Amino acid sequence: MARLVMKFGGTSVADIDRIRNVARHVKREVDAGNQVAVVVSAMAGTTNQLVEWTRAASLLHDAREYDTVVAAGEQITSGLLAITLQDIGVNARSWLGWQIPIRTDSAHGVARIADIEGAKLIERMGQGQVAVVAGFQGIAPDNRVSTFGRGGSDTTAVALAAAVGADRCDIYTDVDGVYTTDPRIVANARRMPRIAYEEMLEMASLGAKVLQVRSVEMAMVHGVRTFVRSSFTDPDAPELKNAAEPPGTLICDEDEIVEKQVVTGIAYSKDEAQISLRRVADKPGVAAAVFMPLAEANINVDMIVQNISEDGSLTDLTFTVPIADFDRSQQVLEGAREAVGYQAIQGSTDVAKISVIGIGMRSHAGVAAQAFEALAGRGINIRAITTSEIKISMLIDASYTELAVRTLHSLYGLDRN
Ligand code: ASP
Ligand code: MG
Image 1: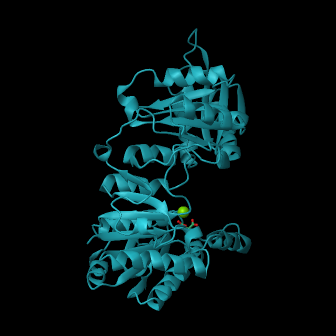
Image 2: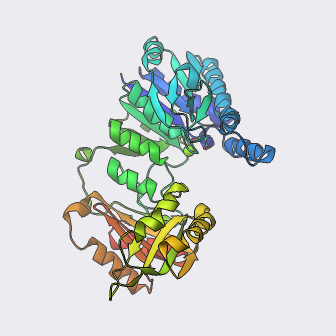
Image 3: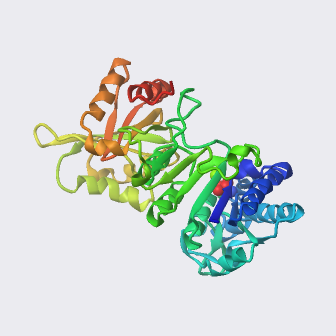
């Protein structure tokens, strides 16, 4: 017997038939003797519709009322799943964020979980009742519903798993795991049986869209073994019953990974824009004069490249910002022009960030050099580079994205043979 949290995303609960299918996945685990809590997203498309309505009502709306509206999608699916479970003879009850409660901070619309009381759920689960929890929502200190930012049900699931001491958090989605890169770009990308928390955090932060970044952080901090798997398989398929490791990807501690590779995955993102400040004075305080106003405007700067000037007078400063903040960043920098003392701003939204990720880089030399050489061989120019101990990111022209991803994927031997 195990205690499990099972999470189902929007495409997995897109209509009543899909919800019935989810109920059968849940029943399988209950019949196997497990204690189960389920977390559901809203039906695919619902949250987009709700967000649109709040915008149509008023572009400058109250964030508390935004939360009242967008939290509704998960309320619907939690009730519907409880009904379909009861319908097939499984004891089940729905739970909204405030009923558990899942307490958050006061940042309506992008709230962070502060604390989850697991006791009541554990008691019900112990009595054999499945807890069907509405994802993406909690209760803020003002006693009002709060939501976690798009994709937040993943975070509900992992946080709940930590709070009830679950043996595993299963994230059921429309793909059957985490791949070495986007299979839409590289047809022979491989599903990874296991990936370390740190690597998954980089993959998610750098563009892989399987899991909300915050949920991976949470899994890493609390050591929640998180298993990404498909809800589109037959719930009663023999290979899912009592299988030690059914098809999927386990996100776990690196000690649990036997076959270690130097590079585990290639991620890409077209969500960033490049900004270059030309002929900036090369003196103390310049970087602060550039980045403080951006930080104050809540703009998240990612890659930063600065040259050392030849004669100690003028240099260039290049960095990236989210594409959505591109115009605003330029306005902020125009405002800081006097204080910084640069001569020109140049920018481009036509860029992509390609990242090579792997824990093995910590102990292997030459991984970056190989990437640079391979991209050069394809005539791809690198505009900027940043690294951490387990990743290398390169900014290139967006039109080369697919070519760069394919080149690097085969360079590090990730292609399925
Ligand atoms: N329904 C919310 C969204 O679409 C939360 C989630 O699906 O994880 O962002
Ligand atoms: Mg999702």
